[in-house]
Length: 304
Image 1 (cartoon, rainbow, N blue to C red):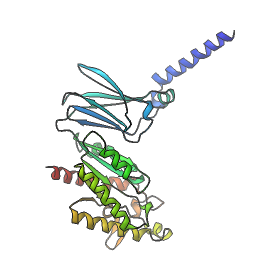
Image 2: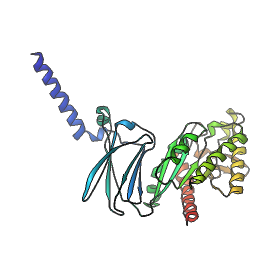
Image 3: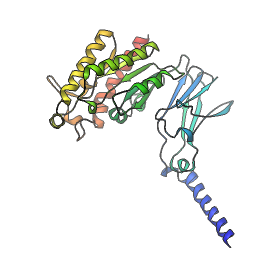
Image 4: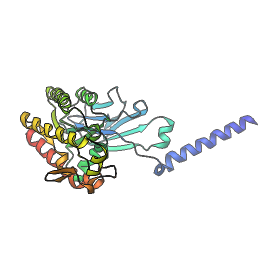
């Protein structure tokens, strides 16, 4: 009797599992943090957020091509090599643990290797960068297949680990945008600039183009409740612009794009969330997306 109950229970569980897997896809979430980068005769897949690295299976298949299955290495990379340029391949990423299979859909995306590879541009920032949905910008603005944008969310001023990780990748990185958050201010701006100079030097030694972003400023209301933050941000941004101009480094001037204008360098109220230092969608759509388009054009000219 007990054996029958156990068998019945197992069958019911299996039926529920199969139903959820095959019929309940609308209830499952999309996988995130995956960057698919077409290169010359290869395709790289990066788990940018190091998200469940051990339980993610990455497979690649194409016409007249035997299916390849890999798992992320310690750096969060899967590299498929020996592929044909311009031939389209399907990359499939899935969670292999039971919880993951129940909660998340498979991620499927097509990609074709490109002769000379893609332009892989990575933004290293914090919450403002994450909310930007940076990797989706080429689709929003119809920039083209040759531009791949990556994002690394680091919730501290020190970006050393993220920069070291990018430098260590066995694939070409075209440019790295270094962006700091208003929450890290006030601070010693002189020492902060010296730290940034070291990161820039590291990138340049690996032929990676550094881009320095100014800090998104804050609203007048936020300024009143956080003494010293506004002035420290302005001092830092002015130092960034001056240093970049002296060294011929590109700048992504976020402050200029979202501030009130003139002598008032506070964040525009219509661009600010209630906390006064994070941005609403309108700010990304109206100000930051077009700004990034301009930067991509400048990077393309500098490569040429």
